[in-house]
Image (tube, rainbow, N blue to C red; front, side, top):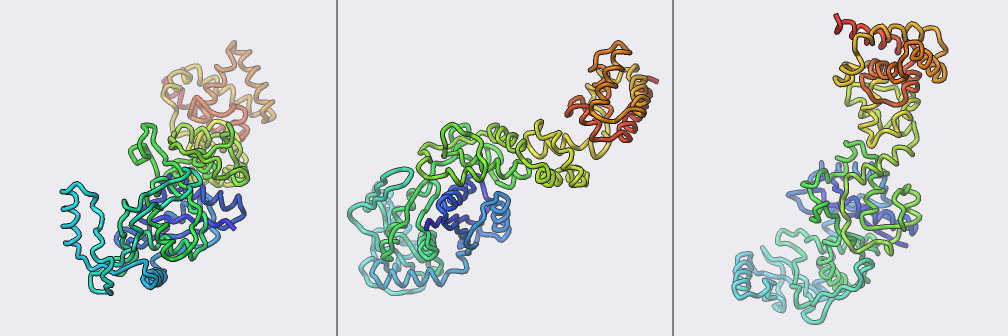
Length: 464
């Protein structure tokens, strides 16, 4: 069975790069009917916070990346790491090092002054020392040959062992280092496919040595390309929002963000738009490229617009409601679901949907200045009054409204737009909206009459 994992460190929010790593692991396990494990790597006591942990879990839940096991917390597994240290010591694959930080720093400076790589010189390697205050445990790394692995994405990768030193496995305060905790957890959680960012390639030979030291078979490694900004540099805050939850606040749908993230490194022919079900069915590592993905916010908005159009009205209404609430409107969910189809084709984000739908739930607080200047001239007052009088006596349907507007325009010697635009502005406060007759039926006759009368009074007051 395929077992993958996602191991975020709770030192900040879940960012785009981490979310893509989680997605690739989730998709690979789901595609192969395997297990997906969530592990919180919180051994950095100074930087890890409960708030960051909760934000990560919230982001994973919003994205719909459900896990089969976990979340496990490394801070609760310290005894497991100490047991692994004991095993490595017993097997002769690790040793106690008594070199003080001051001694190590002096050796580092000497190596640099002699233009040597500042690796540990293995002073304590064969001294058969035991535990002591301030001592650490180091891995007894091979000194000759090479560590080689066949990466599922990058291909064969080779590291000369001479370039790698005896890394610390257990710090002087008794806490495990990243490499040890990572390997022990992956072994005990049955992880057999490690899919992670290309920036972890240099960690792999060190972790392979720990696997070998423990006498355990290696997992399959797959290092996915990095995500770059439009300028070709690694994606960072200077390129815009990088936090997953920031995109939720911008009105991006989770399925659109997943669709976009998967395409930053993976492809299936020329197809751009995927449902979650399609991704699970189609995803595999063979189609992950080696080149960095380039983050393009405009492409994300385009994908989001497409997913908005395909979203069910009831679900979209529930997702739009918080954005309306932020604007001071508590919209009835059923009512919102009935009318939200008017705005799906015209919006790129949920924020835009809410902004466009706002007029349905509260009268406009004002009118667009340019529209007011163009369409609320003195003659608009009598026109709006005439329209209101005729509306009172017709069948209030899109067909009935269209017939009324055409006949009124013809009688007045006006173009249809010369009647429609003042009306649109009066009802919505804007010069653009969904189809006017759809808007009017959505508002209902009584509300249309109230807003027309209010606009008429506004025009007359201006002309006075």
